[in-house]
Length: 248
Image 1 (cartoon, rainbow, N blue to C red):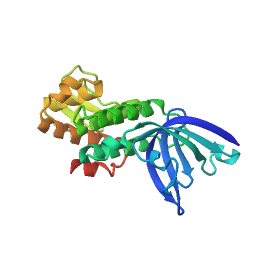
Image 2 (image 1 turned 30 degrees about the horizontal axis):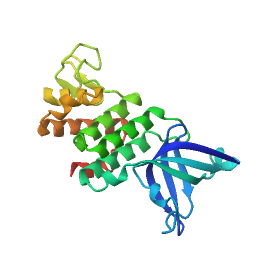
Image 3 (image 1 turned 90 degrees about the horizontal axis):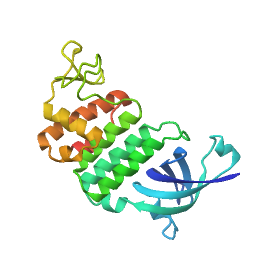
Image 4 (image 1 turned 30 degrees about the vertical axis):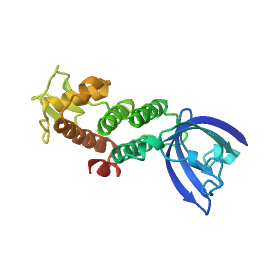
């Protein structure tokens, strides 16, 4: 038997029995963890409200030997709130849908339970903090998170130099399958010709240049969001369910 403790963000909850829940968290040291929280659906639960999606928490887990080997689920025995981001996010539709897409993305990029994913965890914590603060447009925060998640998982797109031959940019064409912008010689069938402003916006979001991103016109932001969604779907091999609500 073993106790272990970690910081984590609650990604998802599922009902279990009459009073329990299965909690999915992305943790700093243990990657994605699924654990059982006993009695949290009862009104007298000590920490039920702390284990809701978007919450950044400090959790203590109890696991038997078989659970440490991947058979069965550990128990959540103690929970302390680090940052209750849900309060600021769930009351605003745009923030809520953007945040839900972030949680789904983080879960999809951490398919293997127990495998450390520190960069993905730090990206998610920072993105939820920014989303809750309301300092930038929610869709811009989401697109920045999606682009950086792709980058830390080895799928960084190019928005300037040619993704195939390295020809210095700016280049006119964009190909999801090729990894970003491509030159005229490397352009594959099906490439699109986005506006230069949209490419500049996506490059700024990937680099964290918020001054440029915040000044972008909505029409270029919409075009850029479509490119990010297509690029993400290509590398995840299927789309995010939550993105359809962001688009609405």
